[in-house]
Image 1 (cartoon, helix red, strand yellow):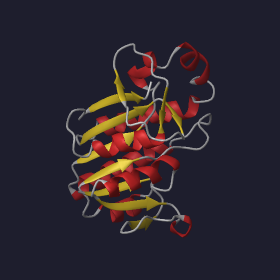
Image 2 (cartoon, one colour):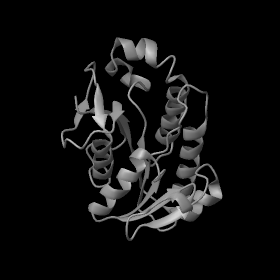
Image 3 (cartoon, one colour):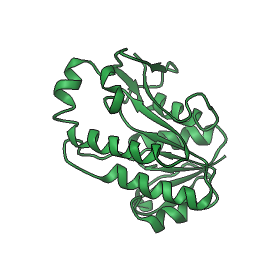
Image 4 (tube, one colour):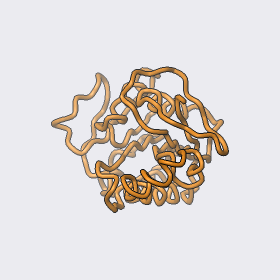
Amino acid sequence: MNVLIIGAAGKTGAIVVERAVAAGHVVTAFVRDATTYRAPANVRVVAGDATDQASVDKAMAGQDAVIDTIGGKTPYRKTTLERSVAGAVVAAMKANGVKRVIVISSFGVGDSADQVGWFVEHVIVPTWLHGSTEDKAAMEAVVRASGIAFVIVRPAMLTDDAATGNVKVFQGHDTAHKISRPDVAQFCVDQLTNDEHIDRAVTIANS
């Protein structure tokens, strides 16, 4: 597949690029600054602002699917970054006939609040994650309303540990704890060709 990866220079996005290439996909990496991004071999790089419609439209041409890994760096501050990016991505996908989007959100958003545990739900989310949680919820709403096939991936607390290859999809009131970035990246890439979770938001964790 021809796959556009938004936020390819980020800590998780960079691993998504590597895993997508390893899976045999033709990857376009969308980054803000191409001069500081070291792309793997055979990866097309497009630089621009992911909230700018013209920039996203340019990158979207010829794509089959999108993985949106954008995330803010100050989760405690109010922001509209992720919902703005999602809006630009959805509009560009519709204009170019692109059929599938995978977006990274977070556990604790929407109906996954039951899966974060008491301390995270009542202390961490209302304080440290207040801004990002609100923005991710709005981003999810944009994706759900798009009419495009989607998978919303809600990882538990991210770690920089090595991949475990063991990713559990959490349901109901099960409490998720943490997951490595490589495992999140692989799960996202797998959703390009897996229909099991289409049009769903899924919480994932190693434990």
